[in-house]
Length: 171
Image 1 (cartoon, rainbow, N blue to C red):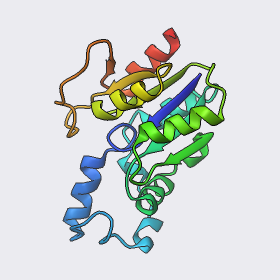
Image 2: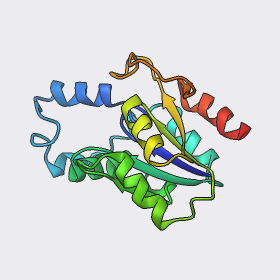
Image 3: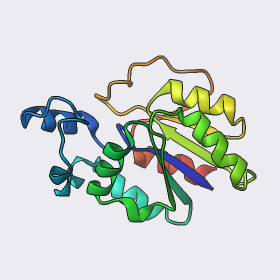
């Protein structure tokens, strides 16, 4: 099984990270955060269940997918210390995840079951429309900015990676 895992608000506590940036006088995530600052270990901003989940699911094809300014996203992911757990990493820049996933499926075996875990209903909906075989699962972590977005009928939801792991085991 292929597991596409979103980074921000799913694996990484972006709310706390943005608070850290603000406390340190960095007003704009991207422009105000120098590359030198990313040499620091920011693994402390990973949710507590992230590394255990990644270690426990190495039998699956794990693919990170993240939206946002590419250099900034790459720096965050690299400095979080989790790159080695992934078989592939898709940095979408400002391209919709659905477009990147459609291209990925056209270049890879689409017969293998694939799940997208993401906190944004809009991303899940668009990805499912573009890739009907994809299984969308919403991450609804407490305190995340999109946790209150209205859900869609038939889309599974989880509140943490332990719950997601139980779901994956049931597939």
